[in-house]
Length: 327
Image (spheres, rainbow, N blue to C red):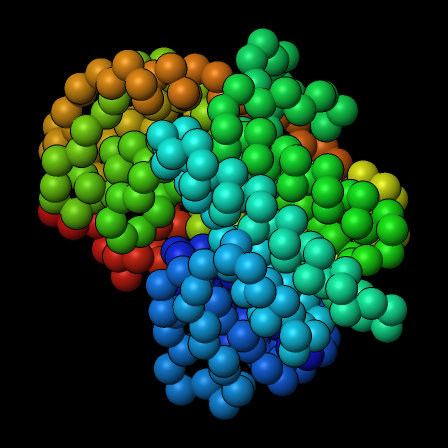
């Protein structure tokens, strides 16, 4: 099995790669080749016997998508995107990467023609929903995003459904919750503070909280995100019918509940490292995001996430801090 990962240098991409290399197979088939792509050079996993091809480019440039799929990968994980805050700040870049690049990739698969029908896993986002919204948001609720990023992802979902209906590829779109706690350095996502107020205090550093403690949001750990991707790549898509895009399960938690989970894990000293500094731009963006979901369909199809935010904090401590809570 040949697997292509776009966005392989990103946090989720790296963790997905590590899982695939560890397992050595996907859906019962041995992985025979990996193609890793990102806008910055991805790194080959150390010590793997699986042949790995590395590529760095802007996949939205003419000809790049065609080059990436020329090897006819059996499974394509499309994780590459401009994140929410950057897509809102740079209109042209957001649409060029998140929409035009995705369309070029879809069409590159189509251009190969009959006899080639890969499994295509597209990472969408809960940002495809916009206020006003019920609580929880059911599977049948309309997508009406209030950000450019959400709009770009919603269009990608529609195209994925149509290209799957036409038999061009076998697509599954997964609407990821905000992935928390993200390890490493902060990115330009408007949602980055959700991870920052846990990650930085656990590392003995100050974190800035730009929104109210009462803001509620939908979360899942990086560990769960990898599980979503693996399951989407192996699920029997006949069970999906024509509804190819799914809201992933997660944990609905307020910022205050996040902070209390941090307190239970690491004590008052960690919580004291959170500094409140309101940011009207972030507050405006977050105010239009969904808060809780009834992800019943995904659960029934076997997708799994953490039961509560304490479990998300524990996953970060286990996976990134060797299971040890710093003093």
